[in-house]
Image (cartoon, rainbow over all chains, first blue to last red; front, side, top):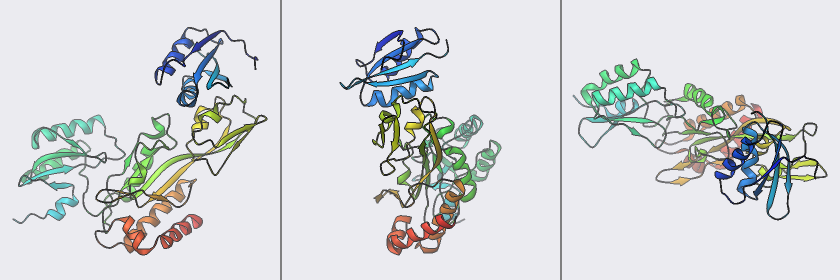
Length: 81
Length: 287
């Protein structure tokens, strides 16, 4: 699974929609173009919706990793400044 | 002079409780109005009404307290701002629509363009009873397609494109009906479960799906004195020509079979659902 050089992590399991996306977006803003963020999110609504919102922002999704504990890590490469 | 309420109703003038006052319903397509139209409506409401408008449950605008003597002046004033009266009574009513794919990230079809097309084709057509079209862009169903005599819902039929797929796994989770499964890097879609919502396509980072955007059509919906959810006959209609053929066929069936004052659902029930389904299926296959 560890095919990615992760530059930063953010945990959005402590917030609910729409703050989930906002928290992920703020974390992505901290990064430089090409850096990779791992976003930890809950099953259900967050994993159904956050990846799509990240895509719509123009970032590149590399992988969704199932942590087998009701959470997922979405690996995202930042695109744009 | 006797007031011809039938003609007034046909022209969108609804009789009010207050004698000689009418609430004028306007022609709105797909819930959109331009700023110019809104300004005109505001002016007419101030000059000829009592300075307020009512937004109807089906995306129209009504200007209340229009006086009988002012009807022609009101029509002229509205026409200058590209606003036309709507209709009431036994005919095709306002075509309603959500914002659709032109604006909304969830939309699967261009609902406004379709509403325009249906409006051009059918608006105000005389029928045995009222007939309502409603168009919603996706399974979220913000426009409540199935409460209309004929409801149209946008959808996307998908086929996995293995060459573009990076196997991120996002689509499997984006799917709300568990139609997607991934085994050894191979993605399968269960056609029995897929509801054409398009969430897999919209969430896919590499657009690894071949897609067909189409329509899910329901018939016989009602949400007034009686309540009935419109039912689908053809699961997915993949092109607009066929959609139009089916709309034509449904309206013709209603025109030919309905009793005066009978809504579409009750015509279908009385004449026989099987007969109606057969008519629609034939139109689809020969379309």
